[in-house]
Amino acid sequence: MPLLKDGAFADDSWVQVADGAEIPGDGPVCVSLKRWRAERDELMARGTQIGIRLTSEQTPGQIEDDLRHFGLVALDFPAFTDGRSYSNARRLRDRFNYQGEVRAIGDILRDQYWQLSRCGFDSIVVKEGETLEGWKAAVSAITTPYQAASDGAETVLSLRQRRMAAGR
Picture 1 (cartoon, rainbow, N blue to C red):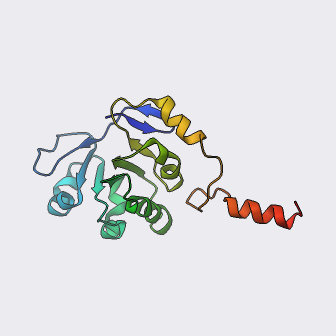
Picture 2 (picture 1 turned 60 degrees about the horizontal axis):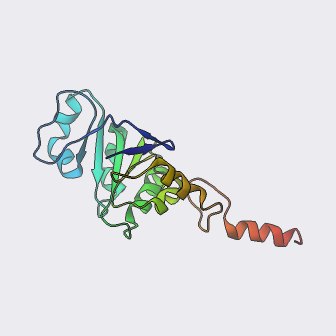
Picture 3 (picture 1 turned 135 degrees about the vertical axis):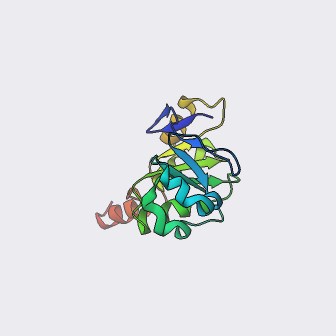
C-alpha cells in the first residue's frame, strides 16, 4: 500500500512483520506490542531500527518506558469511525514528547488527513488506487479548525473572540 509522508507518496523502508512470521536479518522492522513483549531482547540485539504497532485498544502508556527504542509507532484505525488512535497520537506527542515517526494504518479516509496531521501523525498508509491529488484536495478543503490540536493552529472560536474584542 502507498505511504503518504510529508505531503507526497514515499517509499516505505519499514517491514511490517506479522506475529509468528520470520524477522528479516536487516533493515527496520515494525512488530506488534505482543511480539515486542515476547522478543524484546532479540529485537534490540539486531542493531536496526524497531517500530511498534498498537491497536486502538492499546495506549502509549503501555510502551512509555520503551519509547526511546522505537523509530516508528504505527497506530491502527480498525474503522474510520474509531477515533482512539487520534488520542493516542496526541498522547505520544504531548504527554510523552515522542519525536519519532507516528504512522496511521488501517481504515483511513482522505477526509481525515488534515486532522491526522494536526494530531501528530507524520505518515499514513493509504488504500491502493488513491491519488496524491485527492489527498491534497482533502487538506485544502478545510482552512480553520474547530478544535485545538498538537499543531497549535488558531481555532474558529479564538478567531471569533479576537474579532469580537476588536469590535468587528
